[in-house]
Image 1 (cartoon, rainbow, N blue to C red):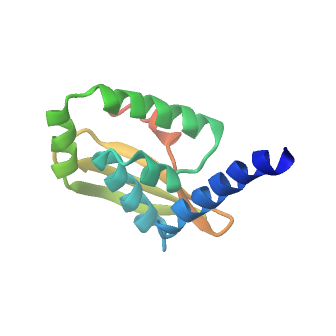
Image 2 (cartoon, rainbow, N blue to C red):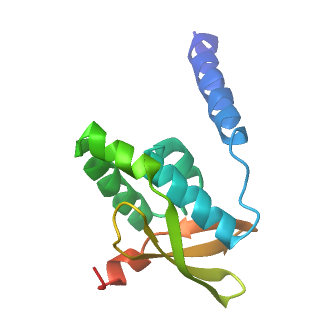
Amino acid sequence: MMKKILLPAAILLLAACNNDKSYKKAEDAQDAGREFIRASLDGNYEKASFYLYPDSTNKIIFARWRTMHDHISPDEQQKYKDASILPIDIHPINDSVTSYTYANSYKKDTSTILIVKVNGEWLVDLKEILNDHHH
């Protein structure tokens, strides 16, 4: 009986490991920011979440954004896909935090995300958006 239960779990685990291999870790902060924003504009949640720093607040923000993105029309989703990332200001705050301010060519709203180095990996931290009152 035990083997039957363990087998699907092992297969799931293998599948999960294989998925991560399809995305390469960001080489630097700019790379992480660009990959995350591009995946977000494309509605590629799996890829975007690969570059996301997975703390509880970020997961909540990401889930909210995902719900919002799912509710816009296919036409609007396509406009986001076609949009270019417009980097405005990218600068390191310290060794392990970089501020990345950008807009996109479809919606000119400016957003700032932080890219943080966690265990040698550059990941996107969305919490700065909560402090961002420029909208």
